[in-house]
Length: 166
Image (tube, rainbow, N blue to C red):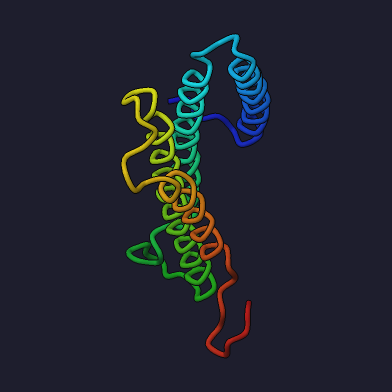
């Protein structure tokens, strides 16, 4: 399976974003000047596809990061034979904690972008803007705030027993 490096992923992401925004801007202009009545729906479909790809990207890179951390984290000092120093066990526990945080962020962001993708595709498929009671909360508010809240909680520095931030 092809897993791109972080450096190539950034270049690809920047290029894809520039291309998509140019296309969406062009579709918007064509729709509002009346030259293309289907441009609005085409834009919705394109946004939905991009959000689905973003969801897939979180899964791929989150999995790659987790597997890399898992390889460095060892078995937490269980059954390794030969004994491990206290410092090595502490490092292993921290790596495992980071791995769990990566999985939480990966799953939350991937799911929220997938939900947002479904809502952008709703109108082109059903002909109605959204199911009753879902706009704007499931379109923007929940799918935008929940990943941010999870990221803030995961990235927040841990506190020690004395209440100091490490």
